[in-house]
Length: 399
Ligand SMILES: [Zn+2]
Image 1 (cartoon, rainbow, N blue to C red):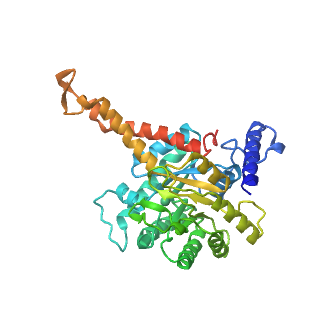
Image 2 (cartoon, helix red, strand yellow):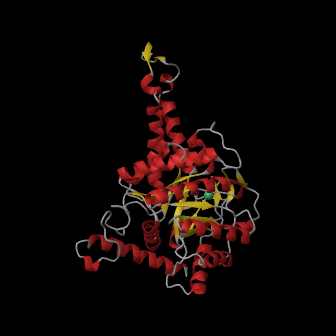
Image 3 (cartoon, protein in one colour):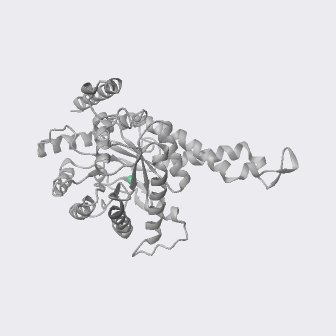
C-alpha cells in the first residue's frame, strides 16, 4: 500500500517533468495547458484562486505529491515576505490568518466583542484585501485562507462569510478562497453536522472548507491540547469516512480534512512527536473502497503542526494526499532570528538616536529605521520559507 502510492508519485513527477519538456507538442501533454505556468492547468493564474482553479491546483498537488505551503500572516510585511518567497522559489502558496492574527492585523486595541468578534473580522478582511491587491502583481497563484475557527469563534467565521457573500454578489467570487472550521473539540457527530451546514452555504459562493477531526496536540492560538489522550491524536479511517459521507450530500462541495496522525502544534524537544502518516494512507484506501472511487487518493488531506517534523515523515504524508501544509512556528523563529542577528551585529549603533562607535555625534537613523530591521526579519523568513517549500516539493512548480 505504502509502496504502491509512493511509486505512483514517482511516476507522476516524472510525467510532469516530461510534460513540461514537451510543451510544444500539445497531443503529448499529460496535464495542464501551461497558459500561465508550464506545468499547471490553464485555470491556475497569478492572483488569488477560487473555485475550479483552486481545485485544479490542489488536484495537481495531490497527483504530483507536493503540498501548498500555508503560512500564517499577521502583518502586511509577513504577507509580502510570503509572496516574495513564492516568487523567488516558484511555488504556489497559501496565505492564512488565524483568529488572533486577524485581530493583530486590525490592531490590538480594535474592539472585538464576543458576539461579533468585529475586530477579528475587520482584520481578516483587511489582510485579505492586501493579498488580493498584491498577489497578481507578484505573479504567483495564492490561496487565501483563514485558519482554525473553534465553536466560540463562529461569529468571526460568520463575519468573514458575510464578506465573502457580498464579494460574490459584486464580483462573482468570494473574498477568501477557503476557510477552516475546527470543531474537533466538539463531539464527532456535531462537528460533521455543523460543518455540513456551513459547507452548503459556502458551496453556493464557490468557497472551500477545511475541517478537522481528531486532535492536533500542543498549543496554538489559545487552544491547549498539551494533555490530550494519546488515542485522540490518531484519526480512524471510519471517522474520515463519516465526513466524506456527510459532505457528499452537498453537490460540488470543495473540502479538505485535517486528520490527526500524531501531529503537534508548536516545536518541542525531538522525540516528543510520533508522526504516523500511514494513518492517512490507510484512510485513503478505506475511502476508495467504500466510495468505489477511481482515484487512489480520493481525499485532500491537510497537515497541521508540521514545524519541527522529520523530513521523511513529511515526504510520506505528501505521498498519502496531503496537499496543504501549515507553516507558522518555524517562520516566527526565522523572522525573529533575522532581527536578533541584526541587533547583535549593530548593537552599538542601536543604543540611541545619536552616537555610535564612529563618533559621539553620529546619527543612527539608518539602523533603527523599521524598514532596515523589519527587512532583516523578512529576508530571514524568505530564506527559511525556501527550505520549507523544498520539504514540501513545491519549489519550481511554477517554473
Ligand atoms: Zn493548526
